[in-house]
Amino acid sequence: MRLARPLENLIDQLLKLPTIGPKTAQRLALYILKMPLEEVRQLSQILLDAREKVFPCSVCGYLTDIDPCHICCDPDRDRSSLCIVEEASDIIALERTGYKGKYFVLNRSFKLMDDNDLGEMNLVPLLKILGEGEVNEVILALNPNIDGEITSRYLASVVGKQKIRVTRLAHGLPVGGDIEFADEITLRRAMEGRKEL
Image 1 (cartoon, rainbow, N blue to C red):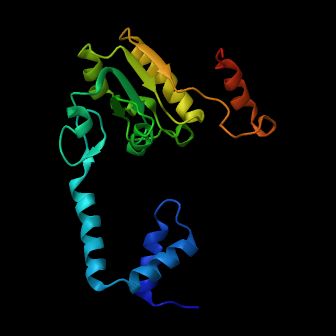
Image 2: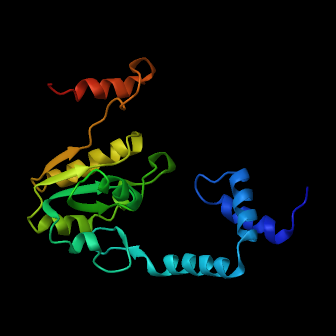
Image 3: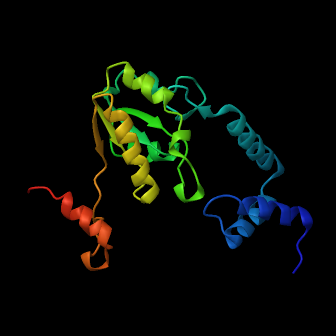
């Protein structure tokens, strides 16, 4: 069935969003068409404002509308601990854990199979933070895949030259998971990271 061209265009744009499949895109598009015109205008203005006014912090790379960001400006943050993440969304997740240190966002996940070069990583801001002498532990909180593993090792070698302790997030079995369904790498990491009770 052929849809009105503007509706098809809206669905096509919504399909570009992560985790949005064809059915969800269609439902969202139809919902938007039912919204009052003023709400649609507000939504479009909010999208434009967010795109134009939100940018990476010049210190840590977190998404902000002020520079430096509120995390970098917070005097209650632990300056001795720096957590390196791939994307700003990782900070949002880690904040829920109660972590109160500082962050550094790579704002890029390196897909090494796509010929990305780790040397392209802009580490000048990171080295500046480390050079201030307040950080005594860097926590590598990169995604637990092959690219995250290689990037973590590269960052560990760079940070290690600064004589700063480098740690990484623990890997292992998820709470509520069954051992029989875990893959070999997860089980190996769970065995290596075991702790005394």
